[in-house]
Image (cartoon, rainbow, N blue to C red; front, side):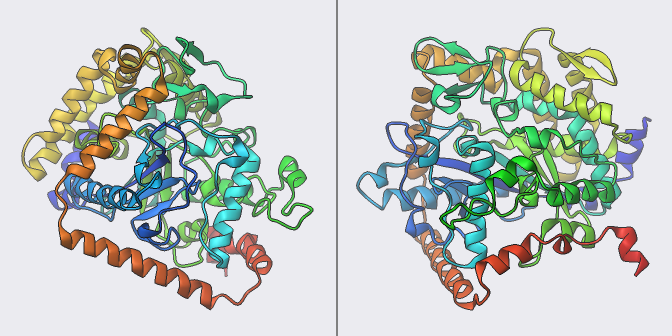
Length: 521
């Protein structure tokens, strides 16, 4: 019996059935013509600051739909579907042009206006609400607003009985093997040319329809076009321990960055440009394929929470929206990720090194741009290895884990998900990224926007046609009303001037102490 299988057999059914997950799904609101909707967050959806399930991400036009924590994939997807239904019904009920808006079905954005015209998320007049908008203003100055309109799905995952060391071992293996998920589930091989206007890129035109693509691309969102920056490229964050990870993040949150100092906190007119002039304004600005997370107290900094109370769950951040799925992701994908994450936890996970961190970044960029290229070679410990061979090795190691999950839950859905992934890796033309390009070419005259617009409209019609109970409508209306009340209460309770609030919030003292220093007191 292998070490992995020994560790697997030591996992009780109680622990396996204690696995929990939740979803966060971003989508742009788009007009029927495929251009970005510039209308405010629909009032019927409540407050984007305080609603537990419906908020906005970067832009006022970018919805983020959030589930609670669930014991099963099916429950998780059922709630995400319900939130979608209420959201689309509320949009349609506005009537007029605003009532025709849809949720953009692709990770890469719809037709975008000029950069400065993309509206930032607005969260009211409270200090916490203003800080969220100023943070977004800062992201726009640092990376451009267009880059921030990319949408994706985040999968939050936990298993009982994992300590900090276990979660960081999982994260190291996840980062090593993330290329497999990008290959299997990447669905953003093409983009509207408006996205890269004025920026250098290596994309190739697809016909004459204003579409750019990578012929063997899987996920442009996770490649050099997506969440990348020169400043963040200087961060070689290690995941060997909570202490080391926290120290790297602490450094980035407190290190002045000359280009951002040049932007300044405020413009000459007194309006805020950004929250801070450090390499990162706040923790969320650090982009990664996976993050260690913990639920925070009101007003608490995420890094402080991690240092004080440890890792509670991981957030998987590399999933593209699948435009062929009504809510952007399906059950088989999530079950595969459950099995994959267990493998990352149970397999040996040696410490990472600066060389390996560079390799991981290179493999990610190669896979994003060329993941379906026949014979594509990645780097593993300095040696070339075929992506397909390495991927099949990982998938084969997932089989006993899938069997254990099926034995816990009944049925054979986890084994089916692993078998489907194996078949897809062996037939790259069946992968979502290949299907997206095939549909753009054969059905939409080489136009990415026409493809995504048709998918978005079809999904809108499908979700609006699903059964919808009066009590569900009443429940969501009550939630929206409560969120507006909660926002007003926060605004009424504010007494501190915003500049004092900002300085206190970004103060290094709020980031918590390294463990060793805490123990010394």
